[in-house]
Amino acid sequence: MSTEKPQKVDVAIIGAGWYGLVTARTYLRLRPATNLIIIDNDRTVGGVWSKDRLYPNLVAQVRLGLFNYSDTPMGPNGGDPKDPRVTGEMIHNYMQKYAEDHDLLRRIRFNTFVSGATQCSTGWRLTLRNSEDVIETEKLMVATGVTSIPFTPKLLDGSDGSVPMIHSMDLGSSFNALRSEKIQNVVVVGAAKSAYDAVYLLLTMGKKVTWVIRSDGAGPLSILPFLILNCINSIAFASTRLMTHLSPSILNTSGNLYWAFQRSALGLWIVGAFWHFLNYVSGVHAGYRKGDHVAKLTPEIDRQGVFWAHSGLGVVTLPDFWPTLHSKNLTVTRSEVESVKEGVVKLKTGTTQPADYLVMCTGWGDHFSMFDAEHKARIGLPSYGSDSYSAADPAAKPGNIKWQSYDTLAEKEVDEKLPFLARPPNLKYTSRLDPRLQKKWRLYRRAIPIELAAKGDRSLVILGQVHTIQTPLVSEVQSFWAILYLLGEISLPSVDEMAKEISLWNAWTRKRYLNQGQKFPYSLYDFLPYIDSVFADLGLSSRRKSNIIAELFSPYHPRDFNGFIDEYLAKRKVTGKITQTV
Image 1 (cartoon, one colour):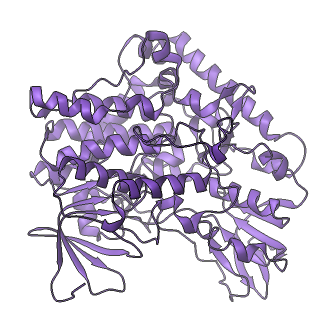
Image 2 (tube, helix red, strand yellow):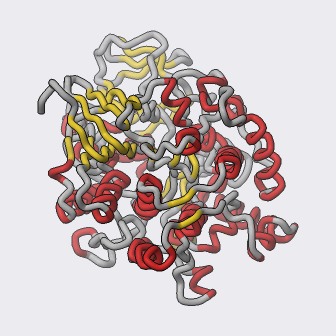
Image 3 (cartoon, helix red, strand yellow):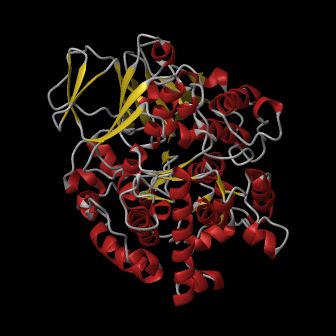
């Protein structure tokens, strides 16, 4: 590629995971002649499910049939229709074949990290790490997700390099090294779901594991059993419309069932009792009260941990998961790693632990690092690396939109419409729940930079900022809606209406998911209300079941939405451009 002048394209998509692939396929379906490029830092497609990030026992927290695109079924594990598991290898192979079937691979530039994205007269100018190449694109679609940039905290007293240290995203590429008989003692740091997976993997490999969890953080996460009472699949039930009424959502505040469950005394009692029961079942399944080290993994929240998902939520998909974690080869300690020297990990408490490997399951960093602070403020993206108010929410700085007034009104409206959230649980540590420290995404429908849209600038969308249980389906719906926005086929509501929607979402996700809502646009149980809102924008019906009973109790699968793009295109021929309402 020439370094003398930029490569010019019509559309650039950053990321080749769930969102990036379906976005490219859909855009080319609508505009086949588009000069489109996909840029990804990995050597294969898949994002979090790329080839290098796979390892044995890596299984998605869903069952078969709930984790695929609407028009492309995923085959069962090993061809066995009775096996409900969705393995990491299945997902990667599925996405690889999807890219092949839709002729996307030739459009992907692998092993390429976008280090800079700046707005220019023709759209966006992209610079690349370790390359003099420059790409200029008329439309930019960022599909990096929230698990693309690893965060590894600096140790208080440093490391001399005597113990190999990896991030959890490197478990796949480090798997063969970890298998070595020379590796006997491994220290795992962090309490995210990736830490649970890493500990399980290492224990099944026969390693002795010391699990270090910070004592003043959000603490261990809540984990649902795969089957509730050994008969009801937890994620399938979470995919029913009944769940949209048991889980208070700011996108679902109308109708008889909303009033019955969320605004009546009896309904609120039923919602609370349901989550108390589910939390109790989850605790029994985990065995927190068996009197061993697993007691230290009890979520540090006084009620309904699986509802609030304060430190995240997991789902057990392997039958020996908890029995493995009860192994005597596991030690759980609440502290922080202070230093690594001469093959010994020293903790802040003063205790030491000989170690052959250190696995840091410490979360994710700035996946919008391609934008500088000025662009982030203009786009409406949070900054990273500081807990100051301005850095937590640069979009809150004085500008065309007075966010403080919108945010204040949103706080009151969420409490009024969803009183269940107005009485939060008691937490062991609450220091990070200051609303001023929330990382706020100022994106309409979690995708459109409102400040740019207000100026008529339809050159950029941010995809994948909806953390939910049905990622492939949501990626398909959101990307289609975002493409129509870029193409000018959707008329947006007023800036005032969009600002209200954004502030309501930010207030709601923080009140609903506590620490997780502070950090991410979390929407774990709420994918259906989000799809409802986007389908309403498109003029489509999201009620896809055959009768009222099925609509309420039957799980929604991606296949239920198969053909929705065709429905929209047929409707467009009749009605023309769609005008949106909030």
